[in-house]
Length: 412
Image (cartoon, rainbow, N blue to C red; front, side, top):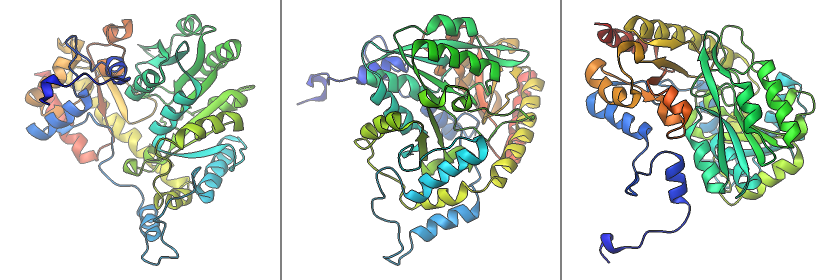
């Protein structure tokens, strides 16, 4: 049968495409702007400051541990299915990390689940906990997989804006209180926050906790940048707040903390009933993954030195890029954490960040990602941030210096 006569496939794919801004009015599905910008960088030779992955690998001793786990010795090689919840050594390491860093005490057998990165943990949690008729509240802008996961679950996505100002991007607490209703089943929180780089304050977290308790909602927290904060700003896990451990699922991963994003080893922790619900779904997604990486990550989690050194290095690279963007004429909100900085192109005369990103390779030999890609299409936040662009500073210093030199062309 010719392709043009094939029936349109059923299912939720349209919901996912619509929720992520990929479905055009004529029903065509576009590629993500992230894929478009990476392809643009490759085609033009522009420096790719759009996609957030390090250009230097994580610690050699961690990588060596993974290589050793694939040893040819059949009795030692970690080359077969690991246990469904994750190998005991990794679950114990996650529990020990939470106790050491945050005084959160978990049963590694029932309250820790290893996942294929944080993305799977979030998707599995949403599929486990929400469905049609439920609301999921997120901050906006938001990491794009959130909208997709909510659409897959058939729930309604409700957003609360983060608003730029002198103190960085901050939570609109009044909008949060208005957004959370008896329909709210899950509040999906991300701090440190991608893409804004905001680290929620204790007061902001208290506001989230209060509305979650009032609505009897579960809070699903994405904390993958938990160790990458700057200027003495501390990340506070929501589960450490009074009365929140029993209603919070905490998600993190090794990818950002140890510069090993391709390994896709993540985890979700929380009370046994909630973790059991997530595990029930997760076992029918990937089932298991990353057998030789799991023992290496277990080893890495005992080390606090590399994450601390990485955060210090990223802070210096953040300053380098922010100063270059400001010199080029952007309005910059200096981030408190993560890999990313948001810059407003309106002072340069550009009111459409997507259009600017498509022109940046020609104008300055650099690629960024429009902040509109992290917003609900047509929302008030998307309109307010239409001229903004996200750049990453998780690149080598020499690459960033070259990018700053190129961006200077915009000032002229």
